[in-house]
Image (cartoon, rainbow, N blue to C red; front, side, top):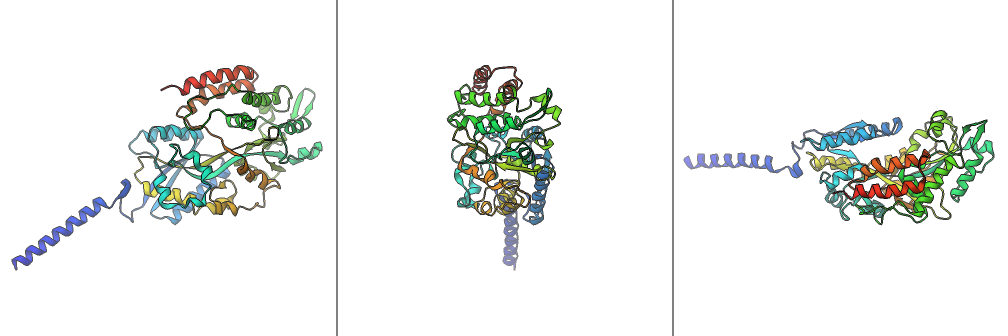
Length: 431
């Protein structure tokens, strides 16, 4: 009898101990909570305007509805505020779980604050479903993925069909080069007395990745590689040609507005007073809502006979200190797999999954040139980013101010590029 009671007591203790050990050890990757507990993921991204923001909200809602144990809580902020908010979060004990990638976040990778996603990629994704060559830029260390891409973005030419028709100018096509672009812009610029009331184009290529595309079409490059370049070369014939071409659009040919003229027009292409511009395909979200504007698309022009089209990838990064990495990965994986066909139907972003990409059809609202302009870039694509710990600092303190001076006609292109070379390389060489 005593032995039976003793055995029963031992069994009870063993079972109790097993329960404790299971509770402590059944929790991989730092996750907390039971299997049935609802986990809330904090996710921050920047606003892309009403149309695209609604699609993002719909995406999060659909994930939450189909994953009742994981609830993504999204915060939408202006671009600059987004990265300030994330940085504050990373310095705390409770960082956000997820954020939407952009180049400033590369500094966080360098500081070890971004999760290496390669183990998840290896376990859960069939990489044959993706064009791995196009994803290579997100292998910051050459081997591992630190960002999970969801979509491609690129540059296209937009033009106002009514203004082209009125001026009897032939529509742009895939054979256009920048000489053709200028010739059309001259015919499409209208003056009334001393005032220009319609411009052939705008300074949409004023951002660094815009004018660098023109330099790349001539064979130019800022650096031999985009990951942690030791030196950047701005003062080159190719980049000088590119920036001089753009400055001349304003001050020599008078076919693009300066800042004051643009303000007087009351806005950009959507005003109906600018005939064409080269901009991101992310503008489609707003353009498709503009029912009274008869617009179309064409591929970005060539320099002489060569076309280079920059592309970017939108996607998700996970913070290293996320308390729920497995659940955060579930959301990321879903955006790269199950949600890709929805992305294809929505048409605002280009899906990265090959099967979904093949199913993209021209939507009812899209203009005639939609397919050629938006998808031929894969033949000429070149990543439109530089990844460096101090790249954002270099942009803010040197590149953007000097380019602004060029487009305000306060400095020559030669002078600006000499200063850019000196100032940028001084910044990126700091330890």
